[in-house]
Image (tube, rainbow, N blue to C red; front, top):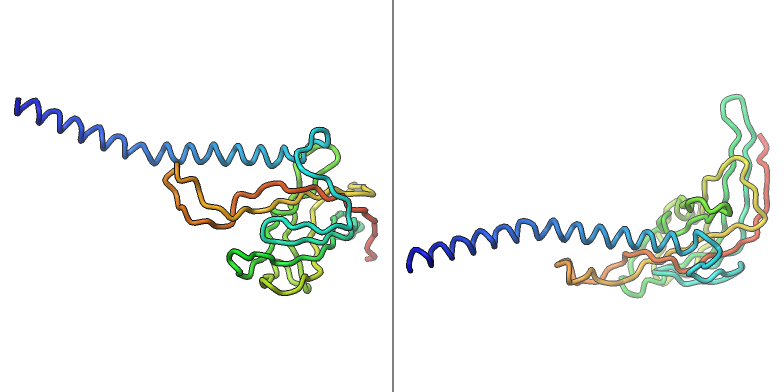
Length: 210
């Protein structure tokens, strides 16, 4: 009996070690699957106009998404003609008021380029912005509680890009904790971007002089 009991103890110890060894791997796999599902949901939220899962709003419009309040106003396609050293190129610049409304953390933060995306008419993948330029500074940190600033965001577009109205997808982070089922932190923080709306903004076109 003593020998059998010892064998049982050893078997239990080995099984326990195997479970702990693979637990972290399974958690990583599950987390990766959840992230992939979220990405598919977000991009599918506005990629096709038919059956769009988020609201479509017309500018000028004010929208709160995540830790920011936006006031979208205008858009401009800027063309740079070909020169001796540079090819012709185009870019889309949108103008909007931006305010930090993060009442959870109350910290200064710059707008990530992943939170504003141009939704192409042809159904191709959304194009992320370069972030927000405020007071002439890219990635300007907005202070919680201060009034909104007039900012711009730029998108790299094909040289032949044309539009009288552009659609901008707005993603908002959520202040929430990770799933306790995955054994991760239960402290809430800003993450898990979700598509909140698509903004239709009238666009003009201007050619720069060289």
